[in-house]
Amino acid sequence: MSCVAVPLLAQVWAELLGAPDAVDRVRARGSAGLGGPLPVGQLAVGTAVAHLLAARELRSRGAPGELADQYLHLDAAHVGVEFGSERHLRVDGVPRAGGFAPLSRAWPTSDGWVRTHANYPHHRAALLAALGLDAGGGDEATSPRLAAALAERSALDVEEVVTAAGGLAVAVRTPQEWSATPMGAAVARSPLVSLRRVGDGAAQRARGGAGSGAGSGVGSGAEGVEGARVLDLTRVIAGPTATRALAAHGADVLRVDPPHLPELPEQWLETGPGKRCCELDLAAPAGRACLEELLAGADVLVHGYRPGALARHGLDEASLAERHPHLVVASLSAWGEQGPWAHRRGFDSLVQAASGVAVMSGGADGRPGALPVQALDHAAGQLLAAAVLRALALRRDGGTWHASTSLAAQARWLLANAVVSASDAPQPPPAEAPQAERYLVEVPSPDGALTVVRPLGAAPWASGPVRTAAEWLPR
Image (cartoon, rainbow, N blue to C red; front, side, top):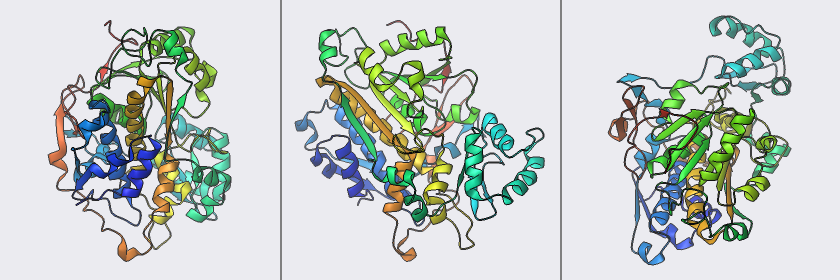
């Protein structure tokens, strides 16, 4: 039996420029256990299958004859546990599951609801400053003052004021209200995932070969994903889960964080297996020069910077294609590449609130709800991994390959495929999925033994994240 949404898989695989007949060779068993009025299980399994299908194709070097008699089998329950992977982290046996800070939640306003995000200290400070509140003191004392300030304002007013101050807050909208906005309309026109060729490969041929294979003098010389060098400039969940998956398939992943914005420890540990990690200040000349050297030796750049944000460092799409034509570039954004919100920051919870997902997931009392897992993050991560793997296969013909996806695109698919009757909705899973433990593995790390969810379709990583200098080891 299969719980794969065939239309979703067919759509994604077409957007990834894959052969249509590959979709027919997929089988999934069981259920992802992600219930509710929105088809979260279908999104989870469909995007995971796309990732694994791309990995299998790359391993077989894209030879149709080798794939013709093969089926891709997937355990949907494993996918469901993977989509809630941050809940299962343990360090030396002690649970270290991440969660939302007290000020990151839905709040009533004078005319509705607003969703804030204050997990990071700088976002918390910006939120409170925008509303004229003192950032000192603990969250317990601050919470009632914040609630009172929000209750006096309209949701859209809070959204505008906090966003202008560099904080994160969105008005909770219905799907219809979101669709009627310019941003909702822009998301509706965008693909779920984009994979496009930039240039014709002339630059690679001028340097000695198509793609970045041996003899080209750029990249790692890896033919597939094993040993391919992946430069990871992502944070939080979506991007890091994509690069964590690439590491499980054998890629050499180097995660780069800005020194002034440390990652939350639980997120860094849980998404870090198989990676080396360093800090690099791109605003400093020395850091920028080091990054340029890393790009020259990399096969893939995965980044989560907002559209256009890398241009100030000379790392816009055109400049990268000119200086590093061997490079596969994959980008993730919250809201997409077009529309008035394209340059805004965002998180899974905020996209759920703005797009109507939170309303669709809410209760009869009108309070906004949430998906059973942070499915927008995880689905985007699966698609980003799939796009990188497909690009590694396609770059043999030359050209620079660029891929992108967004959290908002995942939300749009969920809403477009919502069940029409509550009686048709799958039942929600139990609070503690009894099957989760069998999908967990323990990996060593400098921070202690990490218990994490075993990777899909690959052997466990050899280690958790390892801190290193901002360079790859000599070959």
